[in-house]
Amino acid sequence: MIDKKPPQGAQAALRAIRLLKLFTSEKPEMTLAEMSRAAGLNKTTTHRLLRALQSESLIERNPVTSAYSLGPGLMALGVQALASSDLRRRVRPMLRALAGESGETATLEVPVESSMLILDEVAGQHVLQSAGNVGTIWPLHATSTGKAFLAFDELGLERLDADLQPLTGSTLVSKELIQRQVADIRRRGYAVSVDELEDGFTAVATVIRGALGDVQAALSIGGPTRRINAARRAELGVSLCRAAARLNPEY
Image (cartoon, rainbow, N blue to C red; front, side):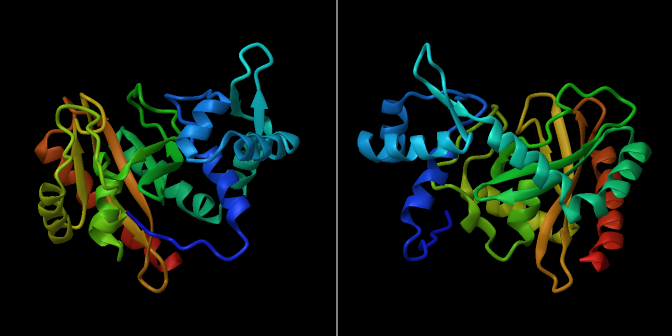
C-alpha cells in the first residue's frame, strides 16, 4: 500500500476527497453515521465537509432517507476529464484496431491507487456482457491490466492493499503467488487474468510507457473464457505488445 504524506494545510481537502471515495457501485448511498465511521471522523466534522461538498453539487442528500450519494457536479467533472484526456484521444484509434482485429472488447486503463480505472473501451463484434464500463474501477490484483502494472511499474507490489479480497474462486490473494505471476509477466511482456475478475471472463493486457520509459497506462483485450483459450491468449498478448510498441514513442 502506498504511503503518502499529505502536504501542509491540505487536511480538510484530503478529508473531503476521502469522503467522496467512500462511495462505490456496491455502496452508492451512505448515511452520515456510516461515513463518519468509515472515514474515522467525528460526526460534526463529517457533516461540515458534506455540507461543503453539497454546496458544489458534488454530493446529494436524499430528503427521504437522509442518505448521501455522489452528485451531478462530479458527473460533470468526470465527463470533462474524459473529454479532455489526451491519452484517451491518442489511444482510441488503436483500441478500435485491436477490437476490430480480435473481435473482443479492448480497453485503456490507468491506475488509481490500488485499482485500475477504465478510461476508454471499444467493443468488438462479439457482444460482451461486461462492456460499457468506462469509469469503472477494479482491484489491481484481479485484473490483467493491474497485473501488468504490478510487473512493470516501479512501485510494483507496493501498490497492492494490505488485505486482498477475492472476487471469484480463482482470484489470487497471496502476494507470494502474485509475485510469481509478476516474474512470468515480465518475461513474456503481457499479463493474463482468467476467471479472476469475473467467472467466465478472461483478459490479456500490457502496458504503455511514456517518453522516459515510465508506465502510464495499460491496454487490454477481454472476452468470455470459452473463446479465449491458452493459444488465443498468447496471440492476443503478441498483438497487444505490438500495439503498445507503436504507441510508446507517442508519450
